[in-house]
Length: 490
Image (cartoon, rainbow, N blue to C red; front, side, top):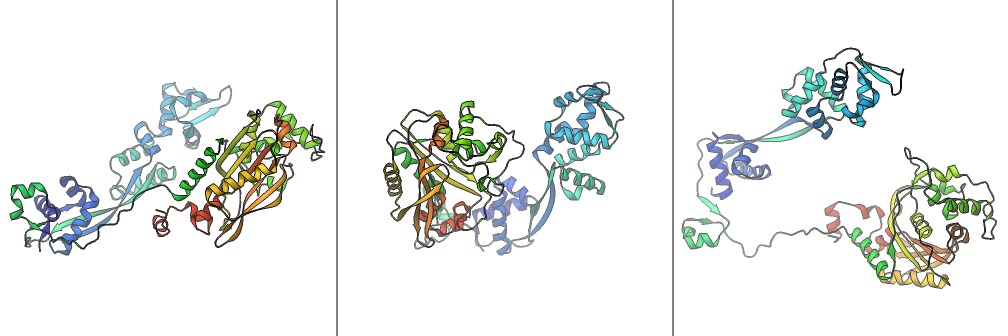
């Protein structure tokens, strides 16, 4: 049976290696990737020239942290080394030069448990005292793994030590597939070598006369070429940005980790509002509570909540608590970015938008996600009114190609009047996609803004569902290439 050039080269090199070799050795000698040896050896096995055997091998590999420890020593080793160099006693601060911040706690814990060190709190900072030297077997084990991590080469004692390294995230166990290729003795290639490539050099040199060419099927279709491109959802978001920039808006941005002050209080949302409960917003641990706003803005917001401030309203009529306003949360609405922007842009006209992520602890279904994208926009200028707002929203919808859209009266704590909008989905019917209105005086006055401001927030994910023809919002984030190709998205 004839062989291709690649098959013939592999068989020739295999014979040179004694008739039996690993795929990695063949790949190295032929200067080819290991992945190409697998199909070639499979073809040779089908033709009866070789036999193949697959062996699964388990091997321990060092993580990035593990590689650091193999090179510099385990944290406990470096701790003892430091104490020895200091005469057996060192202040706690000295650990910063020998250990990473993430290693200090583990090293001290090990030292006290092993009786190798003691911590004396007689001074500031506390002192670490060396009690006895301990042989740290983990050092030898991790160095051995850095050279050869094959599991079968480890002793039972070493395996016990490796399990400790695994628990500490310094090594991981990986399975690798090893292919053994062996020639079948007594069988030689028949039919010559077939070439599937005809070059100008072969023709000019006359080598084509001695070359067996594989048949060329002029009716065969070329292989399908799957061209990479951006995810359709990202393309849609970029289109949205381009439209707004063309309409004269500038893009604003703000932090994901936000204070309740900017997310709720500055928007005249009462501190006992249900949306501020833990089930409607993600509270953040490990972030220092604070408000990054000028003192006059904080005082203005406090006054607006308690008695309306200088707006003429009665406010919410309760005692505003600054500690609640300081609490850090994950941003639930990009309107927080809008009021931040207004607080530093007090001269009209103002036109800005923010297209970014928000987070709410919601029940995930076809219309809701825990993480979602929102488009927030504001227009501030003198003599602005609801007609300007409706025209802007209709113009934006038309630019995006949405014709079936309707407006209804709505309610939001920070706008008056308030308007909601619905867009028609081909399967789900009318979907709420927009909240809008004019910012209330209780929002604008504390910021020092003296002109009307139109505001809106689109549920941009829902518009993307309509544009892309899907009925489940979770499909916007899919990375399944086959699914994307079936829909014609890629």
